[in-house]
Amino acid sequence: MSSISIGGLLRRPEAGAALGLIAVLIFFAVFGGITFLKPAGMASWLNVAANLGVIAIPLGLLMIAGELDISVGAMVPFGAMTVAVVSGHYGLPIWLGVAVALSFGVIVGLVNGILVVKTAVPSLIVTLGSLFAVQGIVLGLTVLITKSTSVALTVEGPAKALLGDFILGGQLQVMVLWWLALTALYLFFVHLSPFGNWIFAMGGDKVSARNAGIPTDRLTIILFVLSATSAAFVGMCQAILYNSAQVAGGQSFIFNAIISVVVGGVLLTGGFGSVVGIFFGTITFAIVTQGIYYTDFDRNWSSLIIGVLLLGAVLMNNTFRKMALSYSPKKGAK
Image (spheres, helix red, strand yellow):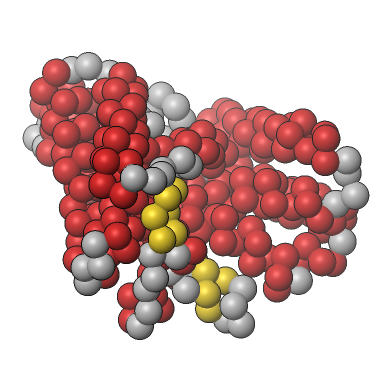
């Protein structure tokens, strides 16, 4: 049985992401003090990572497959406003509001996927169009129906406990459990089933993948549905958690999710990445954005520090990936 080599470990897509995570943890543990690692401090960045991670993993799978979905920035407020209008404004059962919000996510994902597959227009352009279209729908319909850009929502019982509540002493959001469960589910399907091999094959060469019998069109549509529905799910849960929904918001998820995916080791050109890497990349991004508030650095320089740290994590990721690709074990090694 062959031993595990350093080169083999470095070839893993998540290797650079893990090292970047360790680096930022050490950085903020040193400059942020013990408070950063206390339960309250950890909860601050875990909550951010959970909401971002639920969106980042399906988005990362799309990027591995060679596509991109930036409409997630509109789907977050779309999901939030849908459940708020249905169950808050009209007072209908919360589970009906949940079903409607997720159904709209499926519909937008289907539209994105079908347009990309049938028109051959780049997914960036298609989802850019749907981003503005969905934003317009959310704003127009919300003002038309409620005469306001914000809607209150009161949820109690099992729906509150499952979708929008705090756990473990009121510090962690229940979204953290959803994030961990969905990560485990994606990990199984992407790395332990043929489904994952198909995604990587599409990112490498979609034409060859199609010629090999992989249902590339169907898989592309499924990935867009997962991306849009996940964003709607996050928005819906935030509305239930905070008892209100706003038309504005969600734009930050576009860039934050893409950054997390790239920090997690996914190539923008597709064909390379891992669920574990995206998981690490999401935590790294959350730590960097939240950890700055536990340091004594001047807040006026916070954006610069965040940018430098994230760029450093990406460069570290790329460096180790190149080292891995150029690594060759010694002859005779077992």
